[in-house]
Amino acid sequence: MGFCLTFAAMVQKSHPEFYTAFTQLLNNKDQIQSDILITAHQNPDGDALGSALGLFWFFKRLGIPSSVMMPNDFPRFLDWMPGSEDILIYDNDRKRGDELVANANFIFILDYNDLSRAGKDLCNPIGSAKASKFMIDHHIAPSNCADHYFSDPKQPSTSQMVIQLLMELNMHQLLGKEGASCLFTGIITDTGSFRFPLVTADTFKLTAALFELGIDHSEIYEKVYDSYDERRFRMLGYMLAQMEVLKEAGVCVLYLTKKQQEKENLQKGDTEGFVNYGLNLKGILVAAFFREDTDNIRISFRSKGNVDMNTFARQFFNGGGHLNAAGGSSYVSLKKTLENFKKEITQYMKQYE
Ligand SMILES: [Mn+2]
Image 1 (cartoon, protein in one colour):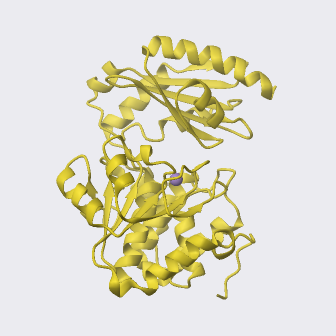
Image 2 (cartoon, rainbow, N blue to C red):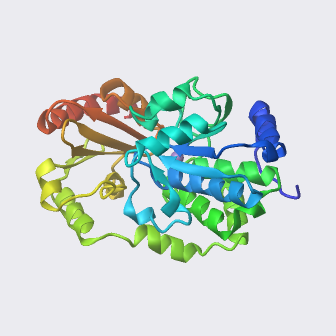
């Protein structure tokens, strides 16, 4: 294909079953009767939206009808993404959503590894759907919920996996500027703009291909990162002013109370990325952000180096994720949750001393 990735794990070699099934789908495109349904995880982020819309533009230019559906709404700083205006939000139109799931012959499961991540209401319809399911995902330990797997936790984003797959097929040109812009957004948001450890030479080679498709990277960065509204900026102020630092353990504790969020009329997605500020402090290996919700506390964990937040989140906070980025939840008060966290993390960090 005139293009050489550094790893031996080309999709065709590493996931031959998926590659064959995907190729067959494309070869038989004229027989596809109903929209291919493209889904991603609840509380969709840049990679969920980016990978889904990237695939959508590819199918569109190939003449395959497809629909993108998200379990719930996505943050406003992503609403410029080409195609985002046509995304069906399951929470807003369940009837249409159920129809799409029931009628689909193919469902794509993007950026999630277990149907529960599609939310408690959407996971059952997808699970019992007759469609053949294709998973493209980079989370650890996928559950047995798809028919075809392209699952690789060494990949820094699902969007990178999509561009890799299409390049191997030498069909990535079909993405156009629109699809390429979506995939670029997924790559930068999931890699902290190319700084996280899973980024490799391949990330840059595949990103170069997106540049060749005409993306305006500066404009995309501005849209994604210089997009705070006043509400979000003030919220950040509250959070930073009340942060706690456990110097010895190298941990930064961030939180927002429900009251504070209500005062600024916080919207879903307004705190996206807040947890990362904790890692900007010198000497900090772990940042944790606690957001008090109506009936639980939503938690994000970030870490540096080999500090394993996936295991920590699983063990203590009903969650999981990646080594350096995980999430969880707590069902006791914020005060008690913070106390529990400080106690457990202080103990947990001793293994890294
Ligand atoms: Mn992702």
